[in-house]
Image 1: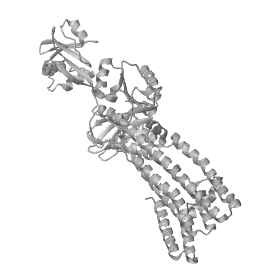
Image 2 (image 1 turned 90 degrees about the vertical axis):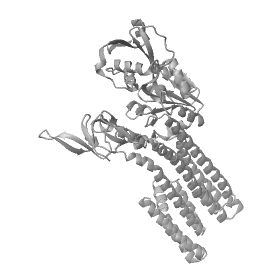
Image 3 (image 1 turned 60 degrees about the vertical axis):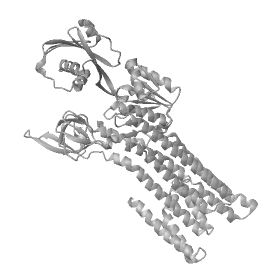
Image 4 (image 1 turned 45 degrees about the vertical axis):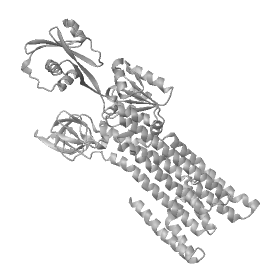
Length: 611
């Protein structure tokens, strides 16, 4: 608890003791009345002062004004216990609210801890010798060398040029397992160096770094209110004057016809207490705050409550293929022929190539590449290459190369990139290379179906056959292939006419579609400026399943918001009617205000906990 919360708790305890004494001695005796008045002043002096100060400032109709009017009125009609109890339970509700807001801030506060305090940069002194200089991260330029020791937080994005270590990225991605990093690997600001001393060459200034962009997103997320949240704020602005006027009418008009001014005044005070809109004004934004905080613990950044609300209404999810449902990296999926021999020949032929397909072949080959075996290598643009290996001529490439060298071959039926291998004019077989599907891609589609998503679609610029095979394997409902970036926007616009659409992309070349969809979800987007600018939701890892988690969080948050609104309005409506009829007394009114507030707050806190 904060110092202020502890102070208020102490006041509540002291006030509670005085109230207990009041009940012991009785409200009819002077000592009992004094005890109740002491309890009232100890716990309510700040409410009375705030109400008076707000009136002077022209801010009349708020919950403190309602509490002040109701309790002073109760004192005026000599209802000492009710006056003290109303103020006591109002402050108890305020304490619950404060604690709840503090808890919901913790996950976001934990994320804010990723801000680095300093950077140790290598610079040259007057004699030209290297020295370590500790500076603010904002003072480090692009291309400078910084040192990160074990246990320190990485202050800037960069590439490791010396050393190896394990890096904890949990604060960024939610992934608890550390990632091994060595020379040539990229590391992101905000992650923690665990085991080894490393030197990094910086690739961005601090204000452009991953950690700075994430912090900016979090800091701005609360400024964007959901429609329902804005409605509640406007509702309370008009609702409070209406109930004050209604209470005044209830206190003044009926006695003219039915008499008993004190009885109708008491009913009006009950009406005032129960009409306080605290439960709505507090619990609705708290629910959204909790939802955004709970999402951040999962490595999901939602840019505002308005996007959380829109995300809950999504019924169609559109995925990019490469880098989203697939890894965006090639791997050998099938070899037709003698696997060991074909991979050995292809790996030696492609030994010096930097093409991704060549890299995937070398990775699949289990043996050692003996460069002495490789003779002359001739690259044939758009076809492949010819290479002399162990004195024999081999051709490694596509079907066009086989036709060019006159090798007889059977056209492969599989989808993907086909690499044929021929010795002279004798085709030995072929190697199928495909983009790997992510392990959780199929499970993502199942999760989306289980939470009520009506349709899943995959858009890709890849050929139709490959796209259909990937779509079948992961289980999407519809696939659209051979699309240019502009075509993707057009397809999304067609889907927008039929429902609420979320687009999930890898954030590199999907900015136009991310912007056009109702909700743009950039996945694995750390380090992608276009994604963070264009997307409404940023998933800080490479798992498409987190798109389903984001939607689940949004749906749960909105369900909690609606529960609180319906519960608060229903209870208050019943007690208002009973109060006007004289059935409900001040104690029931206290439950209608503070009890409903506490229950709504506790319900709102559930938004922070998402499985």
